[in-house]
Length: 156
Image 1 (cartoon, rainbow, N blue to C red):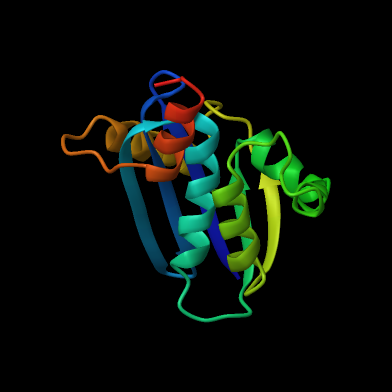
Image 2 (cartoon, rainbow, N blue to C red):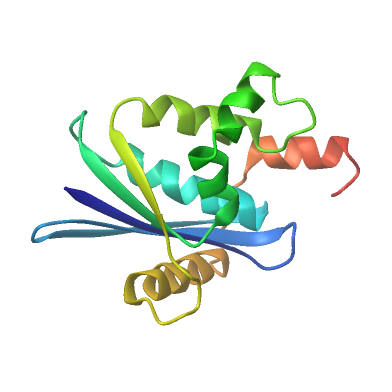
């Protein structure tokens, strides 16, 4: 069993942000994080899940993802994602990341567990620290899809 703990953060919406991930299986433990110059909290929450799943070396793993994001968990657990795919994501944001999640999730047996954010859950708190710190780094990465879409919509 592999546990993936995730969190995303954004200072402003849009603004600089990042994600934090903890992967744990038995005695194995790994932390991941990256920061982006312009993004949103929802994008970082979803990217954290994606990056955690992409970090797994072997397919067909039993994985439990712990997240404080109702946006991510509800979209998957309540089947909204499949409706969005069928409708071509009409009026929905983050199509690029949702499609990326959809592909990587097919490789594993993924279950989700919601945790209340900022409520003392040790791994969630650590992921939040990683995400916030990543968004404060110098030389932040470019979330090219988001920036292009936001510029087209006049948000940047």
